[in-house]
Amino acid sequence: MSNNNNILVVAAHPDDEVLGCWGTIASLVQEGREVHIAILGEGATSRYQERDQADQSKVERLVSDSQKVSDLIGAKQVYNFGLPDNRFDTLPMLDVVKIVEKLVSDIEPSVIYTHHPGDLNIDHGVVFRATLTATRPLSGCPVRDLYAFEIPSSTEWSFSMCKPEFRPNVFVDITDTVDVKIKAMQTYESESRSFPHPRSPEALRAIASNWGSVVGVEYAEAFELIRSIR
Image 1 (cartoon, rainbow, N blue to C red):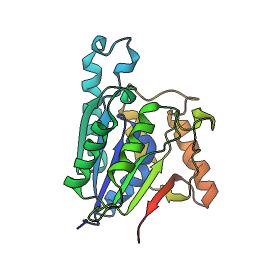
Image 2: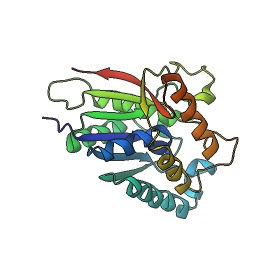
Image 3: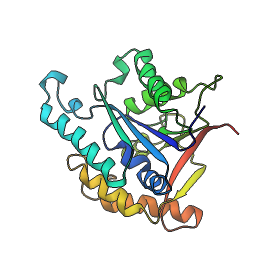
């Protein structure tokens, strides 16, 4: 039986959880929901020709930063799995599915937030497929609602060439938590960028303002509802 207070975020890389849904997650924690963050990849080694050439201190810093970000809002737990950055497509899909399946079994979330399948980043697509597979609506599956989020500098940079396109149909008012989202992103010093990059504070605020204007609030995050069981 699902505990309706449990929420799971399944992200590919450290900072994706912030970019995708942190304003929403901060609001859910304030409401008393128990939030777990799963980060499947290590998020740094693709910047090197070979993974074993990577500066491991940068990987360790991202793990540390993910915990700091979680502590900012009081999330229940962060899980880091260290899969190879931007190389998820080299892994057997079953291995990734098994990670998500165990998370679902252990946490029993009623709601999951994860990547959209039409992103430019290959890891995002793999995570979506693995999450969708791991949450098949079989008897006993606790997951009732599955949402896909956008990632600035990945979703829009596909220029609608990676199908399907992101078509949000659920919007969450984050007027009270947009500053927490921006502070969290700045905590990831190695991943934050200067304007006009989409991961800059100014751009993140502008994106939230744009979605807010779509639905009549000051700031919002947008999601595509993949499945809801009532």
